Image (cartoon, rainbow, N blue to C red; front, side):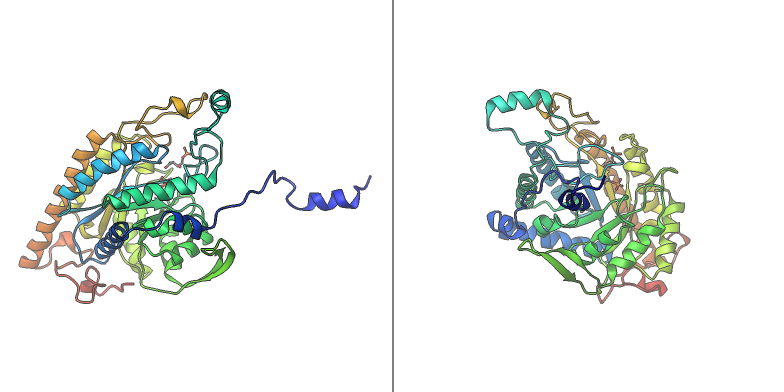
Length: 421
Ligand SMILES: O=C[C@H](O)[C@H](O)COP(=O)(O)O
Ligand SMILES: C=C(OP(=O)(O)O)C(=O)O
């Protein structure tokens, strides 16, 4: 029997939408939590240093290190203070950026991060006790306006400490709320192939890395770097929260590939770095690569990150891939390992431990960072030796002669004639 016309219409759209709630406009949140002079300086300086490393005008390594995801802002600040102290002591060798990840792409289902589902303690005590026994995930409040506010406030507090922050951009609207506080961005393995994320990246003002796909394909990350370098016209929102048509301009690339391993195994070893380099060179792109020690590269066994670090140090010290490695990523937290969110709710969580991927403890992170410093120093010596004694086989790949580029762009690739963008 035919449905009444009105019922039929209702089934044609929004049939599965339970509710639509208003989202705070980005401009209001930015007015409520404005960028301070100190915070702006942290971001600008952090971006400048990252770009100099990307373009071969600074021989340090960018190290993106921190929790897999932030769920407790107090623990994140405690971690940030430790990291800031270390970053200051290591600043001659490492440009340290804290991983401050609020958006989690899931393989299938799971908590999607602090912006999507922050842990907001109910004000009403009775409700608190009731929800303590019934909640799933962080607390299934899905109070996204609060999540955005908490994320912006945390990024602001970290920037005020003088520590640069790095975020994954998973949603294409949320960057309007936080991007002015982000020094370095990432597009994850599950979204690097997405046109929408490549368009978003073309609009981002910070250097950004594209991960290889979860099956290990590096070609899609190279394609993504090429796509993001171009100008695009696409749909998004403006600062007033209005749906908008955004137009971006083609520009010098600030993108790089992140090798994160995949379902076929790790890809941090020199042969994979070399292969990635060759793909980037063929595409006429900046031949700069970050190695993610976690995810597919440690096969989710967090302590293996230290083994990956050892391999990177070896490559930095002597390998032909030495100078195309511009960065390293580590998943680290106050407390080692990971925990599930208890069925009774987040109140029972252990302080300072990840609820997503397992992380290195702070105590294991420091020696890994120290080793990376040693690797950078060894690379410096290698480059200096090469400058004194002519090109050696080891560093032929990049043709680096240890000098800085005059135009601030082609320091690394300029020598062997590869095109730079
Ligand atoms: O970095 C975190 C995870 O690797 C990513 O979000 C996927 O997580 P999942 O496989 O547990 O869903
Ligand atoms: C989700 C992440 O990584 P990937 O995209 O490599 O899985 C991450 O870095 O948090």
